[in-house]
Every structure is written in structure tokens, then in C-alpha cells.
Amino acid sequence: MILKYTILFAALFFTACIDNKPEKNLDGKKLLEQKCASCHDLTMPPLLSPNEPAPPIMSVSFHVYDFVKPNDESQRFNTAVEFVVDYVKEPSFEKSICDKESLKQYGLMPSQKEKVTDDETRAIAKYMFTHYTQQNLSEAMKAKAKYDALPQGEKIALKNNCLGCHKVDKDLVGPSFKSIQEKFISSKSAMKESIKNGSKGKWENFRAMMPSYKQLTDEELETLSEWIINLS
Ligand code: HEC
Ligand code: HEC
Image (cartoon, protein in one colour):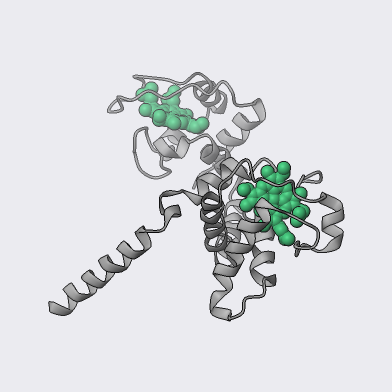
């Protein structure tokens, strides 16, 4: 019991210490989105578009973290953070640890001195080096591979939030896709119409409304309905 309180106390004490840092109330993720996304792609893994104005922030994070030269290995994180704080303010060819080819391709980053404070950049950099890590990348890749392997129809259902109201096997806000399959098994076109127009009151026990999906293309409707009709 005493041990438990000691630990709790220690935890509170250390939290209090960290609380004193000025950037602690700053949301690094949000700031990164606001201040850096106009040039740097933030996705992980990156999208790699052909005319990107700057290297993806994942590449920047990995690169800076690996290439800064801390005096002491335990200081790598802080050294990397301070490198970013300085670079964002005053970028230069000399300071850059980007390879020369990329520098030529992108051109030097314009100083962001007027757009972001040191504390904001510090919060951004801390977020960069805790979020863009090998471990998070491999988890993101796994999730992406899993998503890529899904049937096309299920992807459309996910993208359009169908699965927020319908489960395959059990009723939720709307009837299960299995019951829907049963109703429409021999009339796919009626099902497509129904998805397009939405519905209310056709199903007993469901009081919510099925929204209309007029924005879906014929092809999407077809793929989605095929998927529901063929669910096993
Ligand atoms: C106007 C476009 C633009 C904006 C906005 C921008 N950057 Fe950059 N950034 C670049 C370009 C271009 C490069 C590649 C050339 C270079 O390294 O200077 C770069 C490179 C970097 C590097 C790599 C330095 C190196 O030597 O490897 C860091 C770190 C960086 N940016 C951080 C940020 C952060 C953090 C923000 C948001 C506060 C930001 N950038 C906003 C264009 C931008
Ligand atoms: C906000 C919740 C919600 C969302 C989102 C939703 N549905 Fe529904 N859905 C319902 C409800 C509730 C019903 C039952 C409506 C009724 O009783 O008429 C229903 C009914 C249906 C029906 C049967 C309609 C009929 O005429 O019998 C189909 C087919 C259907 N949904 C497919 C979909 C598909 C495909 C998507 C995504 C593109 C989707 N739903 C998104 C709630 C939802």
C-alpha cells in the first residue's frame, strides 16, 4: 500500500516537473498540421507525390534523428529537437543534413521565423520524433496492408461510414448486412436504389434513418452491392 502511494507520489512529482515546460500545453501534432503541412506531406508512410515541394516529414524525422551528432548518445532526442528549432528559424545549406541531391531538387527551406515560435517548433519536433518512428511506421504499414487486402466493396463501406451503422452479422443502428442480403438477394438493383435514396420505416425495430447516398458513382454502388449480396 505504502509502495503504491510512493509510486503515485513520484509520478505526480515528475508530472509536475514536466508541467513547467512552456511547450507542454502546445499540441505538436496540431501545430505540425497548421504550420508545416503546406509543404511537407505528413502521412506515414508518405504519399510521395511527384511534385512535392518538400521532403515528407517522415523522411525528415528519420533523417534528422539518425544524422544529428549528439555529444552523448542519450542526448540524441534533445539534439534532434534543437536542430529542428534552429533550422526552422534559419535554414542554410551549411546546416542542412539533407543530401545534396535532395537539396538541389527541393531548394532551401524558407525561414519560418515569422510563422512559428521556438516553443511551437519545439513541440512540433518532439511530436515528430515520438510519432515518426520505425515502430509506428511498421504498425502503419501493417494496418495499410490489412486495409489494402480488403475487398473493394468493404473499402467503399468503410469510406462511407456504412459500417458505423451496419455490422455484417448483427444489428446495430441499422439491420445487419446479412439480413439486408436476405431481403435483396434476388434484386440487387432494388438494393442499389435503396442505398442511393436512403430509407426510413421500412424495417421494423429500426427507428433511425438510413441516409441517402446520391454521391456514390454507379460503379461504387455496384461494387458495394455485389459485396453485400455475396457476403458469407
Ligand atoms: C514553404 C515550404 C516549407 C514549409 C512551410 C516548411 N518547410 Fe521544412 N523544408 C522545406 C524544404 C523545401 C526542405 C528541404 C530543403 C532543406 O532541407 O532546406 C525542408 C526541410 C526541412 C527539414 C530538414 C532539414 C535537413 O537538413 O534535413 C526540417 C527539419 C524541416 N524542414 C522542418 C520543418 C518544420 C518543423 C516546419 C513547420 C514549422 C516546416 N519545415 C515548414 C520547405 C518547407
Ligand atoms: C446513420 C446510420 C446509417 C448509415 C451511415 C448507413 N445506414 Fe443503411 N440503414 C440504416 C437504417 C436505420 C436502416 C433501416 C432503414 C429503414 O427502416 O427504412 C438502413 C437500411 C439499409 C438498407 C436496406 C434498405 C431497404 O430498402 O430495405 C441497405 C441496403 C443499407 N442500409 C445499406 C447501407 C449502405 C451500403 C451504407 C453505406 C453506403 C449504409 N447503409 C449506411 C442506417 C444507416
